[in-house]
Length: 459
Image 1: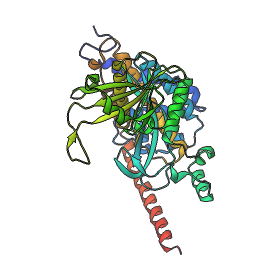
Image 2: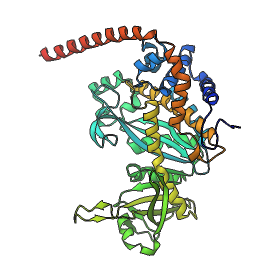
Image 3: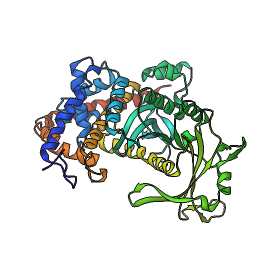
Image 4: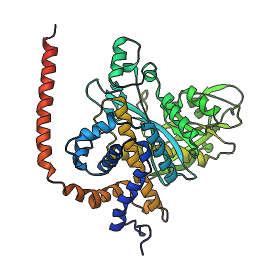
């Protein structure tokens, strides 16, 4: 007999896949009060089902076609003009994710991602470094808060970065921000990525989200203002820091992190795996150094990670050396090395969250320009992701997570068994959409050529 639709090999029954449509409808019904009009509720369902489908590109055109709409106007209006609060939906998404993923090893992780964009009109766009491309590109960069545990991981909050390209008090700047619908309080400030992460974490703490540690990379770990705020709120954290970060010692002296590594005896290092990777356990040599405690009575540690092989080329000597990484930890008294190593290894869950959100629900395939539309599109993508991780969390309750279906498998089966037949039944729309696209492309091309000619001949 199959229980919960899963056998020992992780296989799913067709009837269980078909029942997911009812689960999705129930989840959408639970947030109906967020939307003032029935049309918006229907558009939410259409957009979420489109995001979970295998349309070639998940922009408004193709999502509308998959939903059977005659044109993308309804979904575009849903993101740009309809009356609903994206922050309220975000809070509901967080509740769904926490209910599904809460566990003894749950963590909160902050990190940023970038979407390569063309032009200068989209809110927050500008030439800036993005890890997506690994270089400076014209892009939108956003900071996200991820929630993860042994039961899964997903994104639960988001903030769009407005860099120097969108800061200022000139009339031209105010006009540009007003065109994109950027709130005046955000248009006049330059909020750094650590500050945006602090705001999202504050919302999670106010919602009593259960967690063990807050994790982030060097961009956030080296921000002393963020660390001071975390310690004031007694937030336990494991933050990556650069090698020249100055840390306080118990005797009131200070020293750089790399200086402490130089005096750690070799016998203090222990070889441990921080997580299982694609090629097996990720083994490193680890050591901790006790630092000055906080005024709240919690402990600080410097966690040192050293690679087990020579894998980094020294810029000065040209020889290969071991890669050394540093983590500043704020923990309850008595925290063990094993617990800190496990926490440090969990930070990669945010990368998996980004990969799933972009690869499965089109987080980076939006074609929106305005501030409001970006927040709404991102929140609906998070809603679709929360649904999938909630389904997977339920399915793996009775067996090890490694035997259960992946999020990718659940979404693919749901599309092939439930959504694809519904799309096939609307083949009569194909000619209509061909005609509509042709007319739209001609109008857009004419408009672009006319605008370019006006700029060329202007004095």
